[in-house]
Length: 99
Image 1 (tube, rainbow, N blue to C red):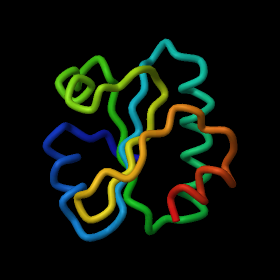
Image 2: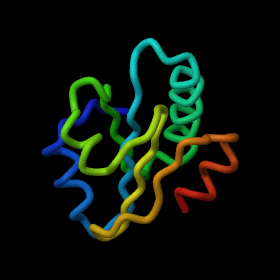
Image 3: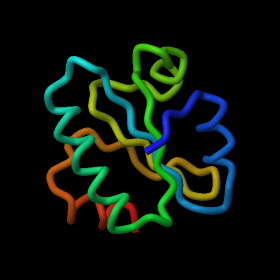
């Protein structure tokens, strides 16, 4: 997963394909588990566009999207917001959401 800036996210969400932006904070234990799950997903589905950012460095994005907690996965398709996921549940659950 590449580290994205707000500009990277804006560029990717405008594309015609699905894009996901994983938001975390370094001291969040649940975020560490979510990161591992997304690493597995990237291995299984390398064609997916998934970026990540430390929420402490993209504060404006947190305000714009009204991020309530971390971890958070923002999913867009063709520039349209589809979903904001806070409970990552399992790898199969996330694969379904990213299909």
